[in-house]
Length: 300
Image (tube, rainbow, N blue to C red; front, side, top):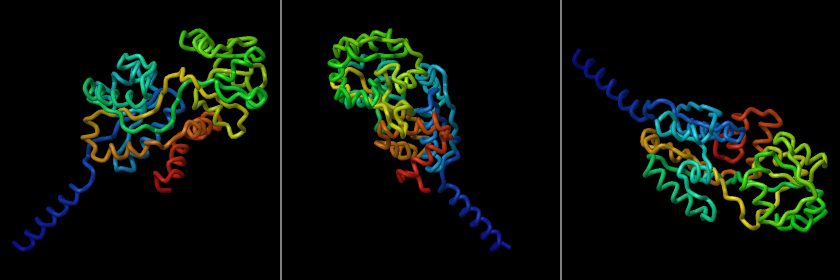
């Protein structure tokens, strides 16, 4: 009888030891995203990598106000992490001026100040830069030999610019672009943001303002190119993961999972993913899984 009892106790001890070898039952890792296609895809990528590390994930998509509402919620512990852009954190959260700041210096200071002020850090740079750009049709670029925005100055008098109202009006938008590069267009038209690429393709306008990862720039049909910002007028918005330090401590292996996003995406690849979801209607999680599998980050 005693021998049977001893075996039973030993068996319970073994089971207890085995259960301690797995991930701790710490609840789901909570991810937030801004209300835009790109963020939905990135949120799913982060979720898949974290699930692959052995944790449950809870994603809250499309939080209105973006950084302005997500960051305070992060401070309150409502979320553990979210995809953020370097200059957004630098300007909107830390209230610094982004002009003339070296990208490497900015990331170092972001990590240091977020740690000191909020108990958060930035993990990995995804590789792409979602910043302002000037877009032209390919035929216009060929006709006038346009590769840089400086090249545009000589041809601007024969070309029509169309931009969305807020870009045309904001001081750091079209007025700064035109002044810095000496651009005097034949005409400047106010066009709804949802129609400007259609107007560009149809020939109603020749030039427009864009973001480097816009879905329309990821079309397999091509037809539109962006010009190099050779005077480095625009600040950079490299994407990374902002994560609470206590989450990294609570979920062993979380940081390693997040680091798998480092250098994973080019501007063109992000634009292509945005196109697949926004234009072709692909599910964002499917797009994320397919991409991560193709890159060898996830097993098929």
